[in-house]
Image (cartoon, rainbow, N blue to C red; front, top):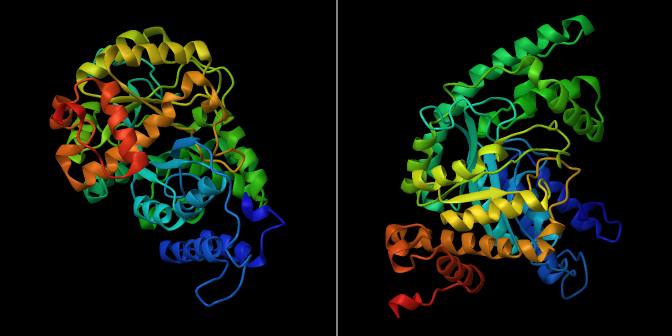
Amino acid sequence: MRENNPSLSELELEYARGLDAATPQARLDALRELARLYRTGKTAGGMAGGTAGGMKPPVRSDNVNNHIHTIYSFSPYSPAKAVYLAWSSGLATAGVMDHDTVAGAEEFLEAGRLIGLPVTVGFECRCDVSGTPFAGRRLNNPDQPSVAYMAMHGIPRRMLGEAERFLAPYRAHRMDRNRRMTQKLNDALARYGLALDYDRDVLPCSQHDSGGVVTERHILYALAASITDREPLRHFLLGMFKSQLVSSFYIDADEELPHITAFIDLAQTLGAVSAYAYLGDVGVSVTGDKKPQTFEDAFVDDLFAWLAEAGVRAVTYMPTRNSMAQLQRVMSLCEAHGLFQIAGEDINSPFQSFLCEKLETPAYRHLIDSAWALIGHERMAEADPTKGMFSAEMEKTLPILRDRVSYFTAIGKNGAPSPPSSCA
């Protein structure tokens, strides 16, 4: 983190700490002053914080990340701080991806505008796959069969309210299950003299009052907080607990799960990009909280064929999580079924880097263009719903996905579009 850099001015450190403030407005005000310091070397009040021409910004790379969590799901980072750290790390673009909520999206978008970082917004949620060929199978969810993690990318800003209306009832059902799981965990912990009160201990770890979701990680973080007040140790314990304890108190989700067909229909309504989050058989977990386990690799050919037929538009994956052989197979299947490919490193821990060095590997360079294409898509779909990357009009104009991705990549990088070649 740049705020730990002793060469930074005290004024910058002060504003960087402001990114942890209690309200979005206070956090954005702090980021606004940070941006001003980098641009001019002075704050709004005329206080000098760097050289006369402004402080030297971080070196930009072409690295991207479309899967950054914030405090509105589970993460140590506010949306403004996540954007600042993404920018400080040298990312070229960044995308927010909270669970079951878009409550941090407006702050994330405004933070990107203030600091000059192109950003996109989305959310992820677990979907019920009952009634499909994959009912009863373990897909990409370590905790429960017949459930798939799905991601919604590139939501136009004007449609965030519609997304929130869809998600709010599912969060309410999740809250009921969280209370039951907390009690079940307490039953297991009783012999150690440990107990959590959901309202007193768990809810304050979340942004529930501001539209955030409460997850199993919040319950486990509250447990870690009852053991130590040292923040790094809490996150270390959280990783251990997530790996070892969840099975002891997990209760299957039911009413909090939209059906996958409802999720696909929502993407169409929002003008967004629906994506399956490929997990693949896990050896060593990049986030340190998943056991070695088998998932969808044994039937991934059939799965991707069904996803494309059902109307899912993309597959998102983490280059650091899987082997080259796994991802070569995934990339080949995406090409075969016309599925857009998106990269995102699951950022929810202070121990993780915002950068994915594997994106420098030639085999993954197309994922950088995909991130810019999402920027272009969101820009176009915001202005005109018929101009999004997967709108009926655009699919008719540019039926080959590769051509469409190139078109939207150019928009993302350069701003205003030129007419598609088939329309010229």
